[in-house]
Length: 381
Image 1 (cartoon, rainbow, N blue to C red):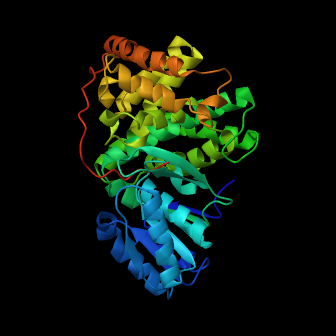
Image 2: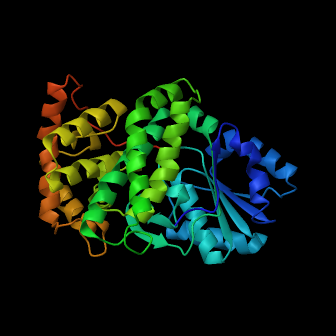
């Protein structure tokens, strides 16, 4: 499974109208006010050049069932034939879900490289508090995914860091799915292509993440940034969908049950899921140590402390373990049985493990995360 067309590059948004016009003649744009403030002028100009109307509906914070239903009503009211999600992961997911329900085509225009959600044929639905509710699956991927790397470079670096956390899990989960010969999000067994793309995503990230993050800190588009954006968005998207998800994302979904973690990005929580998956697998010590060092340098959490939890938060940890192992969760793609207690033990173990590795390698000690009440632009798979 893959999107019909993928467009990436500096200034790409100036050609959005050109590509949307090949898909539909009456677009509806979904975008929050912040994103529209910096991208609206370019989108409007590109639509005008393609003789397309500019009809926009404002987006809030999360892709909830109610938000999706309201978008469907707007599609019917405006007689739109293509919906264009411009913004973060939840904006894109809401557009996909509404487009499917309304029977029209959909386009993803991510303004951050924080998840691989834009390319996929699924959406994550949350409740009003940002807790995971369900995956919604669609029979096809977006007709177009367009990402402007200058817009990515202008965004806060935290979003790109989150994208690294999300994308690093792709190979860890794909190799587990392949080992178990389990079912992928595409609905069948893993292809060699999907698994290979997941591995390529991993390799590109390890080689390019640190210089790319430095480029974004200076709002620069460099070859390293272009490679990282492709890894975070396209390679990881194709890799997770046709390669398979496993424990890391299931544990992410479980973490949404802990109020202390609200406000963290999708990728930050996924990185804790990746850490826990490596522990559950009994991965080689060197692999775990290298993962802790690399993701710490990237700026991702590798301890419970950094996601607002402690070893004493037994009630929350049990809730996370239970939610992560619900029937139908992707943790059951692991090549062995994983129980809720296994998840709790793995999560508890990463605190001392990560602290010791960070100390041995001269890395900073964890700083406790305190929940922030700020907009989160990441929906993700």
